[in-house]
Length: 263
Image 1: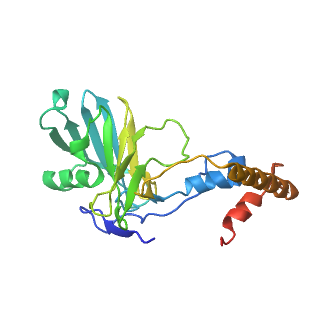
Image 2 (image 1 turned 180 degrees about the vertical axis):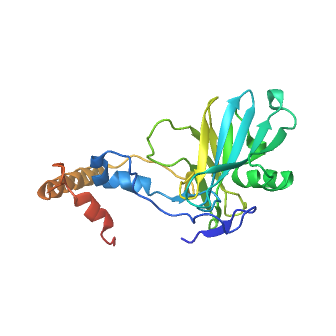
Image 3 (image 1 turned 90 degrees about the horizontal axis):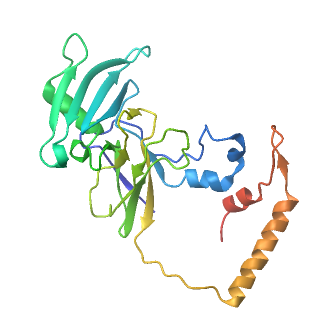
């Protein structure tokens, strides 16, 4: 299957391209030898924000419909310097226009107010703020056009279990005909924030077919075949054992079988 890429409309070509990543470095060591967990982590593709290596941003939720985005630069590789901030105040009850206030954090104004607001829109979707309360929508650097009959599902990073983790609203879009910009909808608590940097993914995408799924019960013959296949798998798994440098014993049988060419 071929999926086409097109860039963030406000910042074309900036940011890492989507990629698969089976590893989660902060998981326990024994998880590194779990092929089904690695396969789950590698499902779909990681999506990154539209940033270069010397840029980052942080958006905070202050409660009562107020949000603050801070844009940082680190051109020398030393200290990160805050350049500007954009504060958003949503309407009471979520009805009406939101207010935008730009504040420059350097001695001289780095750009114009209009450019600052446009830059903020490159990273987030202001119209989605506070729907529901605490919601922040992050934009990706690249977007997807799927083949006919295929959708894109936007999820948080799978198997990323470090706390605290902001929950995310998972969405599914018919990207074969709708030119959707990659968006990841996190929901923060008052006082929480979320950051974006060049090499830190902001979400994951999975491509799924739109065909209908039907279910039926297995026949007696099919259940017997499944039972025999399970016995054969356990026998072959028990015959191959390896030991890690940490003394953990495991079998690579599933990994080898899953990566073998399929007929």
